[in-house]
Image (cartoon, rainbow, N blue to C red):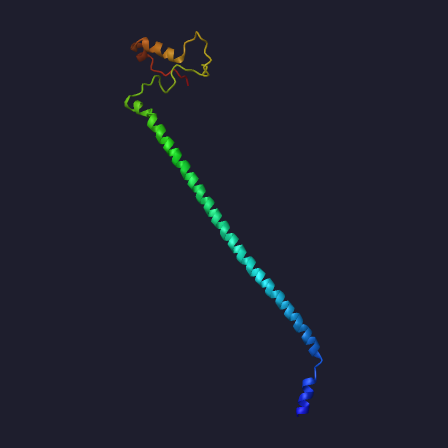
Amino acid sequence: MQKRYVKLQSFRPQYMDEYEKLEEKLKELYEIYVVKFRNLAYLQQLQLEIERADRQKQAESERTMRQVVEKMRMDLTSQDDVIEDEVPPINQERRGSARRVFGNMTGAGMSDDDEEDGNDAPGEPTDSEEEKARSNHGEDEDKLDLSSGDDF
């Protein structure tokens, strides 16, 4: 039995050479795999750090932009307040007094032949002058002529 055991120990199967070659190749491939895996993990970590830094820069720039816009708004409102303090409102004076309106809404005294573009000759009376002249003639004539002057 011992003889057989010694004989088996010295015996090498046929596939053993091929097995050892493949084992060496596997070790080399595994070393390459480990190096590439480490490089990949490092690059992923680096990418995350860069993305985080970009987000921080973007948030900071957005924050500064908002501050600048807010400062501009404050400047504009303070300028508006100064202008409002310096210039009194115009409409307050007009509110107390009633407006006087001359003429009527029907366009009395105007016909389709009248020129409305303001190209009246210097000697011709304007519509407002004609209205003043009519009102000065007396109320008796106004009572007699109740028509608006428009011919339909």
